Length: 180
Image 1 (cartoon, one colour):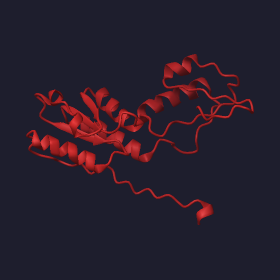
Image 2 (tube, rainbow, N blue to C red):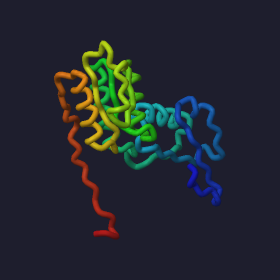
Image 3 (cartoon, rainbow, N blue to C red):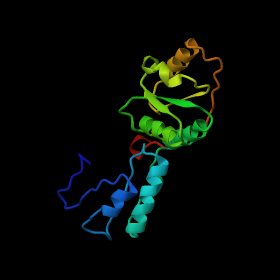
Image 4 (cartoon, rainbow, N blue to C red):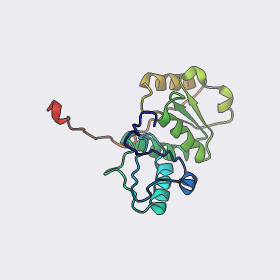
């Protein structure tokens, strides 16, 4: 939003929840479009889009889903994993939107979830009386950090590490015409 050029009279509005949509006041309700941040929660975004379309039937959206496929796959995997574990560790930076969404999704599933940049940020008290620890990572988290978390848990007595392959990502992107 900070980079938007409104010199031609347009406006940009930030809505984060369906409740924001209810109170949104716009200049031209019949001339609206929306985009979404690519690392948002897929479920939360769907609820906001549904509210926008209900309130502003003429609103236009992107031609295709603008939530990143890797983000959606990770969120789907966390929903599944959260149902199988007692606590969730999300490896990722606190300023990573998709890492924060993964932690929130696990927490919404009723599982205590913690965001850690690296293994040295794990608090052993989080793991007390927990038998199954789920680990996931934000899309930009280096594999070496995830491996460090696994090794720390092994050093503290974790006996079995089971890796889920998740959904295969076979997406290819075509080169821009200028580069072809």
